[in-house]
Amino acid sequence: MKSKILVLGANGFIGKNLASYIAQNHYIDKHVFYFASKSEFAEPVQDINYLRFDFFEPLSLQTILAEVVPDYIINLAGTLDNNDINKCLALNAELSRRVLETIIDLKLEIKKVLFIGSAAEYGANSVIPLSENHELLPITPYGLSKVIQTQYFNYYTRKFKIPANIARTFNIIGRSMSDKLSIGSFIKQINNSKDEDVIFTGNLSSERDYLFINDVLDAFFKILFEGKAGQIYNVCSGSHIAMSKILDSLIKVSGKSITVNVKPELVKKDDIPVSCGDNNKLFKDTGWRQRYKIEEIYDNLL
Image (cartoon, rainbow, N blue to C red):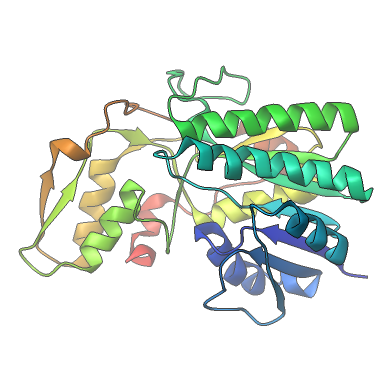
């Protein structure tokens, strides 16, 4: 019998890429997928079951879990909005707690729950590279909300023995990424530009650990099926690159003559100079390996 995988918050950047990924990698042949989202799915994929789900309605979550009775849950629901701390806490932390509470209330025999963490949890920690054991020093509402999710995760996995993992992602790059993120903004502006146009950016000297979305999804399924329950795994490349280099490469691939203008108002006051993760634990426990180097995927982004 095929196992059932419920994906919450499946209509965002990761969810949209996940839909095509599971079809291309034949996961649909082995599992039954249920994608749940508050908004309507614009481009449904054949053989995926789609459900409407109101994040802020407790009974909606209970109804979906009772109806699907999933073997696995992947919680992609969340927000990047650093301007609304209450929204961050509700979607990035409290929803995860409610998922765990609902599993307990319904006495579901879950094989694994996968939550998505973030490098923003490390925040001001300047260690390079960062391992899962390094101190969490968030400096944004988003980072704080993900740390609280981690605390819920630690509590429920210890006390109630719920089999779960956190995939602590660093910077994900791929099609359909939000233009609220720097690289997403670059892509949108380049796509909308003509020759001799100007695009506007914030600080370009920051260096980040970027990983292509397909490598991230590889890691998610490796963790889901092979990760040790109760563990947190960095999902990262283990190297860092300046945003200026990525922008230069994207402009070159576009074939357009574009001028870059750094606007002071777009420069973040609390910008971290360098962030880079250590993926040795992920490799050791699951055998995951990075397949795509960032230099190989620029054509795929525009």
